[in-house]
Length: 307
Image (cartoon, rainbow, N blue to C red):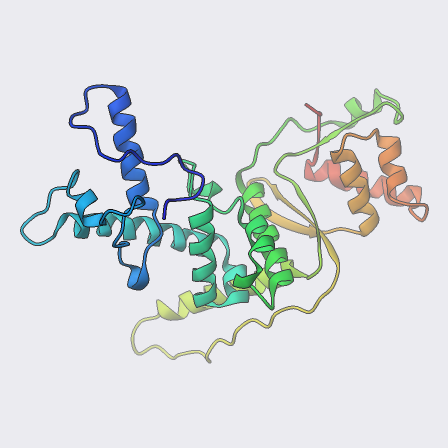
């Protein structure tokens, strides 16, 4: 089995690294050796992608030592790769891990990484395709797929908000110079607008607080009084909510917004003029509400120039 989406590895490593082409072929071989999914008991798979034994292939480019064979040395680095990524996904998605439990979350992440190997130098992008994978690979999340998807979308939005691109904020004077019928504004790239079927903002916050208390208890000196056992955070009941995930002065925030406000922001994000965006809010929106919402968006720095 080869990693999905990757160019197939060369059958043999180059005899020597005499060119950049030789180096690329050798790097591709090493990449496949590391990112192949682990087998039962987290062992390196016995067979290589072309049917040969992995031991035979590994011996061509890894030297054994007095204690370890070539494939055993390879296995150390393969496990390091997989354990690091699984651990990082758990750090980025504590809410999703809480929904599924540790074992099912581990299985989900392994299947996700087998289908979508990391292609970025930064671990920041590791879970970028996880929400889509959750939506498609329901066997890993059933019967809580809808909740798992909502949590996965929310937690990826937090990553985007934390270090996403920021553009210069529009000022009131810049907005006033253009009539609403022609004025188009942009929203900050780090801002995510989410329509969710569960109040996962409250749920993820509760999970993080629980995990913080657990970490505090585990770091307590021996002999210190133990607090009551921490109970699992109860999964939320279905409830439609609209949430804006953003940052302010370098800190991460999420804000509940009204459905009408959500529709207006979506329209602005889609490039509609301000007058049409206001109309997208619906006939029940009063001018005072629009004024208050725009004042809040300006204060939070959400409005920027469109590209």
